[in-house]
Length: 267
Image 1: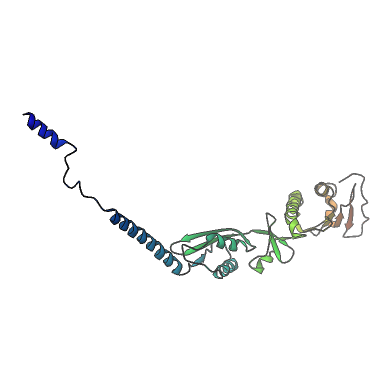
Image 2: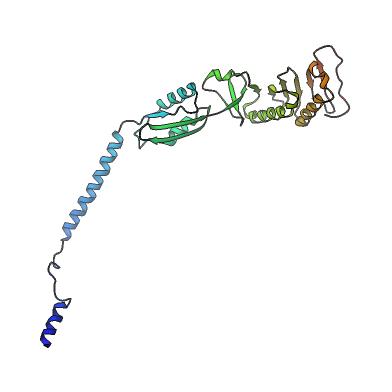
C-alpha cells in the first residue's frame, strides 16, 4: 500500500516531465522571425510614404458662404496658385497664413473633407466707412483694400482721412460724434485728422467744424448742446464753425451775418 502511495506521489511530482514540455524554439529561429517582422513593418512604412508622396495634389475648395462673387474668385485664384501636396500631407497652417495675407479677409478656417478635399472657409472684413478714395475701414479701425472696387462706391459710407496708423482713433472719433449729434439728425460725412492733429469734420447737412486736439471731445460735445438749444433756430444758416479757441468759437454764415466773436463762456 505504501508503495502505491509513493508511486502516486512520484507521478504528481514536478520531476515528472509532461509530454511536450521539452519542445523549445531555437534562438536563431526567434532572431530570424523578429528580423522578418521588423523588415515587413519597415517595408509597409516605406511603401506608405511613397504612396503619400506619389498621391495627386489635394483639391482646394473655397466655400462661397459669406463671400461676394468677387471675394470668392479672388480667394479661389490665390489658392489655385499654391503648390499643395496630397490630402494628408498638405500644410493647412501654411494655406491659412496665405489666405490671411489678403487684406480684406478677417477670419479663415482650413479643414480636410473626404468629399471636397481641402476646404477654405473665409469671413471677410465688414466695412463701415471709406478710408481715403481707394480703401475701406471696418469697425475695429482696420484699413484694407477690398476685393471688388465697386465696394468703394457706398453712398451711405462716411470718408475718413489721415495716417493709416491713426485709423482706429479716427473711427472712434467719428462714432462718438455721431452719437452726440443724433438728436440734431446730423451724421459725419467726412472726417480728417491732419498731421498737426487738427480735426476737420463735415456733416451730411453741409456744416463744417474745425477743432484742435486740445479738449476736442468736450468742445464737440458742448457744440452739439448749443446747436440743439441756444443756436437751434440759426443752425441751418451756418456754413462752418471754428472751435480752435480756448474760450469760445467763431461761425461763418451762409448768408451775410455778423460773425460771432469768441464768447466769454468756454465750450
